[in-house]
Length: 267
Image 1 (tube, rainbow, N blue to C red):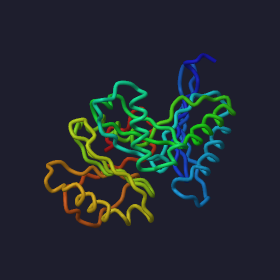
Image 2: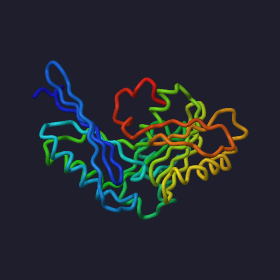
Image 3: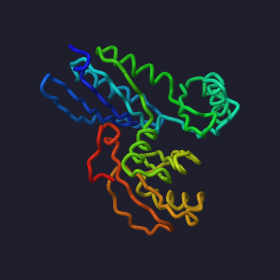
């Protein structure tokens, strides 16, 4: 099989489900299939064991050689906005600085994680993320078991932010991104990350939404801002309350993280 004709598989990994987008190539055409696998196990949001079971099921069903890219739910990732530090002169110095910032918050748990962050930390603040090293290792092992190769693993927050930036063509945005059990609130001012807060919550997100939005207004003083809060939710819903500030609701299903181009009327 020619390298350019390897199947392309993109997978969104969440605590109780995965979404698989499988693109199968031939010399004259390509065929795209979408599959969702769900687990009935009751797990904590940060527990990826059930997700790995689903991932292995999906790989077993491929029956073809493929390059696999995964997008990992925010439930499995810890984020921090790392302040710029002009004294940093090398990757090694950046690594030590990022590790120090995470250790201040998470302590010894840091030893189990792989950290990544954006370039240019000496000049601008960067979002850094921590992913369980064993999760990445198991994904690689499962791919190899079925003669596939894991070519990338990206945090969902990164994919979501790039999607918003590309689709809305905005350099300044304040957003509240919600998944089941997890929310991320961020502010980007003229392309520069200014704040990022991530937290877990219990209960269904629609029931929690009024409190989440009002908390965001309270913490960020939205009344002094001209721009609206971009509320990113995974599915359509009816907003049966009146927020105290401007809100624009964007329905962003996890599937969008796997698409090369989202529908024209999306967002």
